[in-house]
Length: 169
Image (cartoon, rainbow, N blue to C red):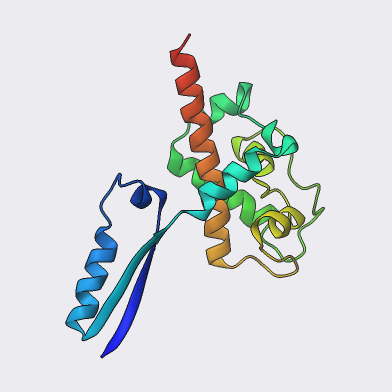
């Protein structure tokens, strides 16, 4: 009989906040197909770990949504900000040889720009150094999705932090 291991990813699964229904579902499907499931494992989400590591870097840690960038993030939906991030990354960072690489991302003027610097998704050098995405080739659709997710999570955290801080006032 064939055997398999199932690997699921998510901090919410590790903490027990939600049930691992995907792992259970897949195990039932595999067993129905005659495959013995010997292990279901859960690993942490690498994006959260990477964001925590970046937040400890002095240069990256100084970035936060403030002023007009904060207002812009608060006034847009998460879906809109994700689409803006996708468009900005596709235009400025995704090409194999981006125009002005290393200087193409302003420090202010849009929440995504601030997030790019905070998350080291601002240029191909930073993507290679911090995220293991090699320069010299166009970003794949999966890499583009990953970069957008990194930026989106950082913005979500900034907005949650701001809401928490403003509730103390």
